[in-house]
Length: 410
Ligand code: ATP
Ligand code: MG
Image (tube, rainbow, N blue to C red; front, side, top):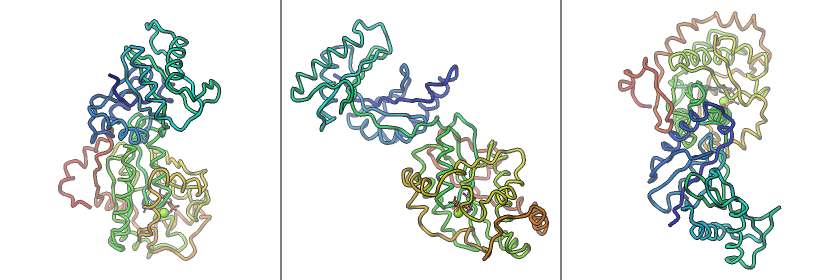
């Protein structure tokens, strides 16, 4: 009897040379974690694909939407796994095509990953096509632009048959690129930027600067909700929170009003790079988009990123329109959460007229007007965190591991 399985198709991993197995293995690990609540029997590699088998009949249909969200997955098909028995795979083809209703035209597309099967692709197309013509006498074959295509894949001793195939998020498996620390507000942009880097295989470590104790901790809860919404991607294992309100207050009293935002940002970048060093992260990531707000002119971006030494600051959204970012936020499930207005450090001690084209000499003078080094050290000491179970590749840093239990959960 044919069983239902999820056949996972990848694209970019297929372009990898010698280390392709490493990418496939990481994707298998990530899929196992993403499907941990389902009755999965096995996740493994077959030639050119990954295969997920289950111990119940309904599970593949529940699993497919989860699999689609895992980086590295180009497509997923809920397929019939058959013996190399024409009667069995022709019957499966009839069932697969019936699921494609409504349709008027169809074709069969056979492919062999192993050439040790006596039936060639042309034979398979003809055999399965004949069975389908019998089963669906009112439908027509169209080999050029069919409404439905029945795929018949001969692969390692089995024949897989499927019709419907859903697109995945693409990209590369999380854990195949380095760790990145992302500056994570509860707004629209930084969650999208974080998601994008996760899709490229990076393990993401978000750091949120909250206005606490000068504001409530509302933004911290929103950030946790956003991280939870991003869990299906599997890129985040821990969220750091830095209570930033008191430092903002001190800065606001010490520097010219128009330069406050740049000073806040410089301190955020500085603390983020210190966390990156403890975490062993190889880059900082922000949600900045050129010219979107006052702090995101090129002059101000230069004035803030100047404090980061030895790490690239990546800005995946730098050339994106707000509309595109919003559309992506909707697609990844963070839009509604980011749309809530919560007081955070961005609304605290804000100047009426922020500087849009800061002169570096003025920035340097303001930076020396308060003890930024002591502040950064103090903030690093006060950092708190929440762990999430969704990232297979996340390893917490040794330095903070023993302190974890002592810290109050957020
Ligand atoms: P976002 O939608 O991500 O909040 P934004 O359009 O509001 O971005 P800014 O407020 O200027 O832009 O922030 C620019 C970037 O600085 C953010 O994308 C984020 O990476 C970082 N950032 C801003 N506020 C915070 C914060 N409270 N905690 C951590 N990072 C922050
Ligand atoms: Mg913001």
